Amino acid sequence: MTDWGALYAAVVAAVADLATETLEEQGPDALEVVVPATPAWRARDVLAHLAGVAADNVSGDEADMAGAPSPAWTARQVATRAEAPVAAHLAELRGHVPAVRALVADASRPAVVWDVCVHHADLCEALGTGRPDPALWRPVAHAVAPGLLSTVPARVTVGAAVYGAGGPEDPVLALDEYELFRGAFSRRSRRQMAGWLDGLLDADALDALCIFGPRDDDQPLPVAAPA
Image: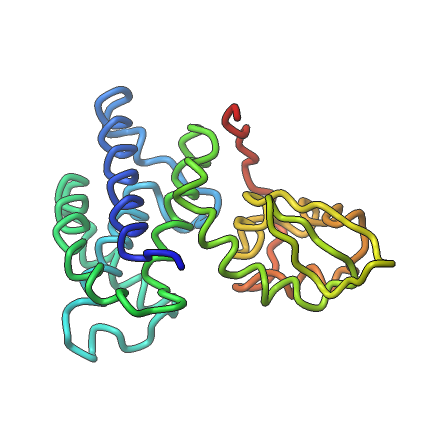
């Protein structure tokens, strides 16, 4: 069982470290870069969104969660923090960690945790820092893999795990853990996913793997960290 609260705290710390180090090394303009995974947002907007997601989830006011996770809901989070400095976004995000940890203590599919994991990877790809530490996204990949891969007519190895509907006579195919994580949350284009599983799945089946629907704009492919 994944301790989702602990994962949330770890990823928030990683997001804060990434933003702080980027500011210190490159200056504030570095966080004005457009994030390819969320092209309507700059890196600083992603941080505002993460702060807003945390605040809305723990506020206790049903109105704050109205419309979640629609574009209007996320746009409000960014718009209401547009004039705040990045430091304020980070302070708000970190300040809500204890409450979020309590909120997800018994959750099996905690959207607030998965969201921060996905957006941390978005920021890493946008800022060119390479793949994040697997500990910060691997649990999410394996949480979604059973459902997404349950009808694939093969045995699909994802890291050390095996998924799919294949039997002894069916092929054994490998799928990169990080690419599954990114593709599952619609962070890979149709072209980038076309070769998955040796072309076993048709276009419709590949599209169905994308939780937020397929996309056609190619995304940055970070280099994996050395083993």
